Length: 293
Image 1 (cartoon, rainbow, N blue to C red):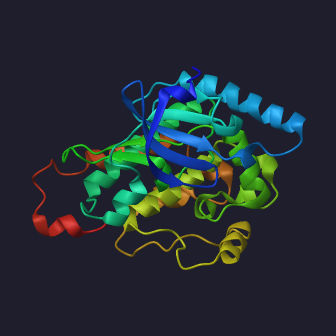
Image 2: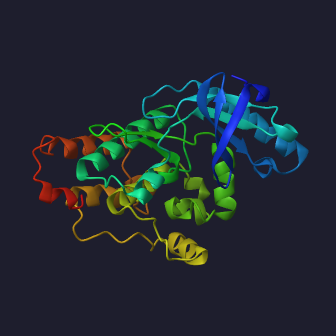
């Protein structure tokens, strides 16, 4: 639905990225996340701008139709923002992103929590792909978590929308903040191969983030990352103590060949099988809680 800019109250800025700035705000008394989209996302000739806005609008209609516990709820779009800018209005997740949670590392994620979070993401992505929606920017910054309940972390896929803009931006230039999660086919000129499997590649990198709590390639500069992705030689180092099943799934997800990457249905099934082998909660000796997946 169309949300009037005057119905929104911005409370504080949560962060900004390539495609815009996100605020925590209120809409008719409900906590929401407001994403003000950069004008430059709609840059180009007037006819192109018009087409981009149409794409944005058509996608918003699709997104408003999505309902899944692991996908952030999409409430509507703002078309009358400051200077004619547009915005999206979505569910607000109080704990913020998985990246924040991993950086704080206050509740170090044990094997069980990592599996539950990965499963949530896989369920959300399986649903999006079943609706023919490719995310294009799946990474820990865009996964929103609620870790309040000690027994059941909840993770939802966020930052939906703008998929055409994202895809074009990524293919045309690659963005430092997004590069480590980008599938090679987005960067090496084989854009005819771009499919929903780009999200599976990104998920492999997210699995690595869950495993290590680190940011991929934090010590590499932009050029080295692009070069490594394009030549398909760059992947994050896997710790020796990584569980073999986790490793196998992660490495298949980031396979150079899109057709070799599993679907999110297969991913969800494998993660479910791994979770079924875990001892029931409360039975793990405390000494084991620090080992990696």
